Image (cartoon, rainbow, N blue to C red):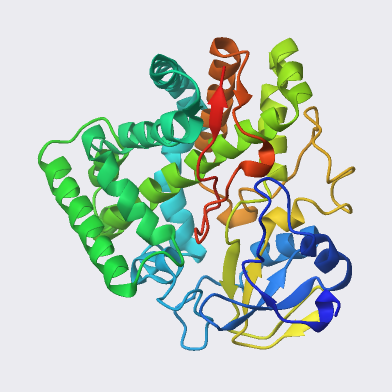
Length: 403
């Protein structure tokens, strides 16, 4: 039976750590708006073509109202971060959304990222020194990929670094679609919310040079600032988004570059390729996670098909990033590819607010690794790398390396 005649389970099962499921190419070619069944058992439509995904991301009719009565539940227990009431507190469209992005976005400018680079490099150097001290083989994900973005986002938010293990658990419960039960998810969210609420109270009493203190200093909604509740949720959202995605991407990026030794050698020979190499690994990431869900409160057409009101669609940016109609030699890694208009960070008004932070962290990690560990290699065959299952954000369980 061809893919356009069946209802696929979603996420599409895939054992390969770095390669895409074969179904992506089949869907793009023959069934770009596919019927899928989610972990909850509910039905949705999966979008896999570049132009279609871009159109959905730009079209305000496709909303984030995933708590609507007829919206598909992403998982049986409610789907963590996507379906939580907390996710609805930050305005997701119109002037309110633009206002929120303007206030928070000041912390993610290219100028601010450039200023943070030396601190990021120092954190990376220290973590790599610790990895080397412990001896080979080591787990690059645990030693570098996970802690680096945590330290960086802690610095930005003014969160004590010693609390990072607590919010790694909280963020996992918010991002994992299958591992935790409803009670555990709700308890973790309540703890996380209370923690951020207490932190905001402390910052109001003693402001620091950090993002949360600055949001408080802007005043309340009447002064052009945000309500306390919105600041709490902003802190939670940035903590989750700011570490889990980049932590996983560091491991995947290094694995992709070491999977073919010629790629690593090319970067050693010409470090000016680091920027384009980072973009290319983002484009080729076949394990980016669940994709972006959107809900249609009205009828709309996409990919030549009319979708009825009440449809939930899932945009697979990872599948779209391998669309031959958008990228020449789309299945091949080209470390010099430029321009590279991939959709790893979304597109348009809802493109990822922290993309400059993620890009900077990935570039810095690569710069420091190439300089300090030029002989770095995977300690297991690529076929033995394991995906983490059930995450809204895709990752590898471990990245065993030697040097």
